[in-house]
Image (tube, rainbow, N blue to C red):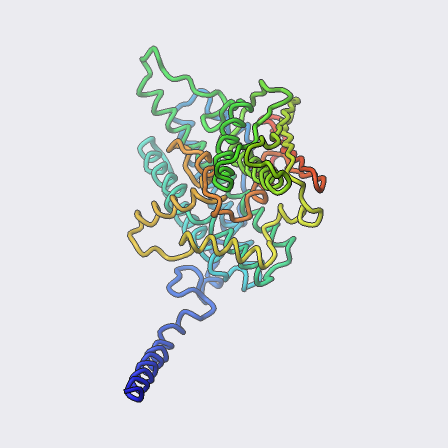
Length: 464
């Protein structure tokens, strides 16, 4: 009996081994230097760059955020058509320049699975824009806007997570030095923000123009924001309270049953300024989450009565001057060791941390090919993204979604990239994020943001 069982087990193992060996030819076709069935990344692609080179050599036309926002005053049919054609011609120039930059990277970087996905998506968007005919009428513009909304949602949805995963894998493999990888990712993010703002502003102008036509005789006609519907007058106190509430909920999941830190707002509590709400929620939320979590971790480990005592508050001081607004976040979370402070702003993580973050991406199945229909895959991907530090930013403002959902993501979905992205977004708004720490006591984090309109003399390509 034992001999028979042993023989049968050996036969099954041999059968399995034979099957696996037979599959090697099928698997090996995926191991080449170029992705299988890619319409763009193939041996001929880099030799067929004539069209791309032509577009990349054209001169882009940077506009300031203020110019972009003010274009919406006194809308006419001609202004809508001019705006559409500006977007139609400007974006393929900008994308072509980024595609050339990606081509010039070391082969192992641009051929990374995730960065290759970003490249292919960029090229697909480039082709869509360059082939779109001239907009000559409002009807043409309607079709153009439908294409733009598709670019903002379905086509562009996974670019951000793929960009982050590509950076993590490059960190693990040491494909690029830390400073070069940070500059690459930061540059691509800034350019991405600018492209999306240009698209969203045109969609906003079109919507305002349509509303104006529809309600032209109505007494209760909507009055639009004079500097554009994507820029809102934000109350610093209101948005701090919203993001602090979500940061508190996040931290409560880590420490159930314990009292949470209170938010104390100091300084100019009546501060209001024009800003892009999703960006503001993202930056405030990421910083507050870190402050709340650090405060509770230090409080629980150093206070034997932590189950009944109130933890120290998180204080935010608001500062206002003619060209900037600033937030100083102060916590008593024990501080950050000196060495890692510089690394919190980097996309190039240590291999161990990079593997952990990459593992969380993989758990959310954001790196796989869609196994369902495209529509279902987009829905699933968007729901997964909203649980991460790269979620929400892809949400089209036209659907009235913001980064509030991002701040409500579960604690287990930490990716370690939130502060690095905050740095890029603050820099985009002519500001900065700085962290000062006192070991054993706490941390002060300074977020400075430039006001819309005070940098309209700086024409920078990746600012708008």
